[in-house]
Image 1: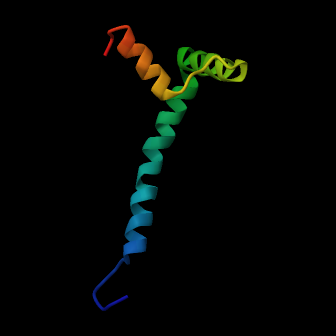
Image 2 (image 1 turned 90 degrees about the horizontal axis):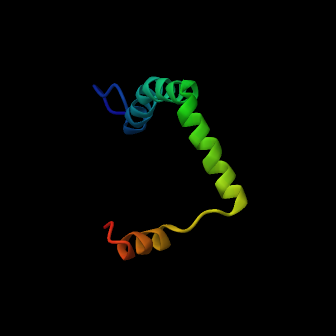
Length: 69
């Protein structure tokens, strides 16, 4: 580290990551408290386990065919 430089580039990068943590934690807690969102997540996980999914390209083709995009 050179004279007069308080933080290295690595220090700044780490500080930026850490500074976002409180907001991310609050958002996570809000999701966990929202019963409707949690229900949707559980249903999505069940769909994945049951194989009721398709890849993104297939989904886009279906939307285009239906005239939705």
